[in-house]
Image (cartoon, rainbow, N blue to C red):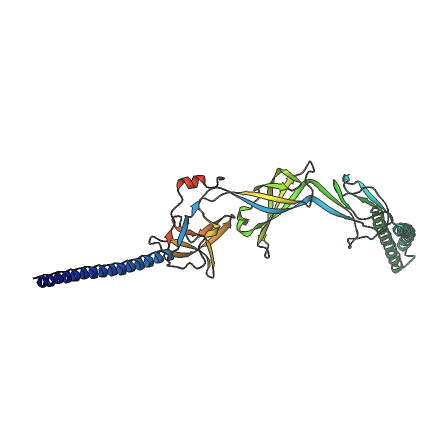
Length: 398
């Protein structure tokens, strides 16, 4: 009996061991299957996440229309309304000068005197030659009168009488020539007095007492420079893109370094009506009243043109443009979130924004700061716009 009971217990134990072994095997298989499923799911999730991360996220903006004008800032060159270098018209030595730089002068005011001994002697000789010509002309005229009387009585031949008449006419012409030479030398004598050609200020004196004076406009022969500064001319080179807007009557604000706290209003009076073929710019002239003599010729001017806006033109941020071999392009996003590159024609450059003449529509979504690697047809993700609170707080100090 004990042996039979022992055998029975061994059988029960064996069954329990098999049962537990099967359970453990099932658990091990389940754990192994679960681990494999987890790894597959993790790989799938990682692949999906990687694929999603591979899709670039872009910020978009739409082109806008605005009627706001533009402040076009350009450098300007200031010149006197009238400015002239003063040269000598006769040769000699400077006897005296009466005006120095900064002197206000009136038209006809004496600036300097020149000693001209050679011209003086030439004038004396010309006066003597004129008297000689007049004496010869008087004798020839008297002789001609007598011979014409003799011809009436046929006491002399007509040939001889005609010769006397011709000689009288030649002597009269010699008198006219000598008189013209005297007038010329007297004009040269008058040029000994160097006069101001108009009201203005002496801006340069390039001579001194005893200096050799050469007549004419040769290098280094400029005696003085006189400028009329009651009104100023400001010349500006306007880029080709703005040339059509630069018309007579267009106002501008002028700012000068020496008058940092003041602005001046000037008006466009004329343009060259032609572009410089090298610079592709239009020369524009403005005029500024300078009755108080606050601005000096030669100053640097910062010219601010107030240009009217164009409600028909589109504007985009400057950082949306791609520079490609095909020309200027922008990357737009279609309804399926795919990139479509569009070629554009640029108008005026406003600095942070540019004018788009053609190539896009107002409702196009344009990528801001597109990467150089962006391609046509590429899938992208559009970034969500910032929350209103973020937009409101943007730019506030923290």
